[in-house]
Length: 65
View 1: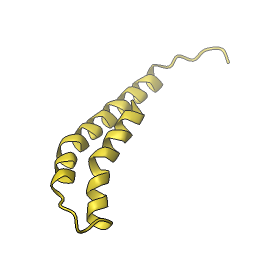
View 2: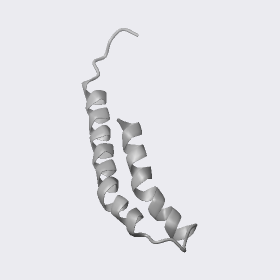
View 3: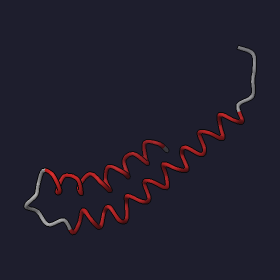
View 4: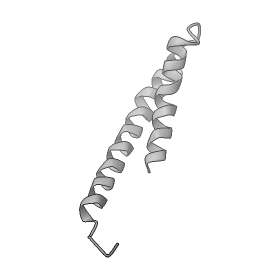
């Protein structure tokens, strides 16, 4: 789930950063749309992944090691 969140964040904000700093001559309409649609979805998935990870840490029962 963490990999999905990272991929969504890169797909959402990567083109926006690339057109802002590297490809400055290109139109930024598509990267801005990706940033507003895919970026927040990636952030939400990242938040859920962190919550699930913390819940798994809390729920872990001490066992024989």
